[in-house]
Amino acid sequence: MAKHQNDRLQGTLDLLILKVLARSGSLHGYAIAQRIQQATDGYLRIEEGSLYPALHRMTGDKWLQAKWSTTESKRKARFYTITAEGAHQLVEEERRWSELTTAVGRALQFA
Image (cartoon, rainbow, N blue to C red; front, top):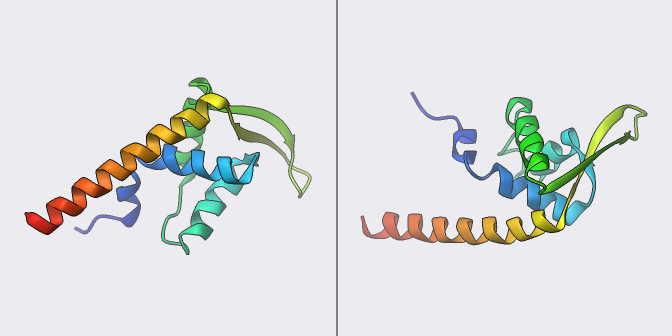
């Protein structure tokens, strides 16, 4: 059975969330998922069952700050903003991603 393309996302969700918030400012969860989907031309779709536990964990780790506000459609939602600690973590996550993709590229070339 073929793997679903989102299985490749394991371990990269933090990086994607931090990057979206660093570029876009404060967003609610659904908007974060939409930005990722739009940026990847629909290739990556973040499911609620992955997104919200990650946002909760990242808030607990002080990488994100969350506060309640109202969406454009007048619904209450938690809006997330990257913190200074989150910005430092983003640098670390980008470094790890670069190392990983370099290593995989080498393995594919020489294996």
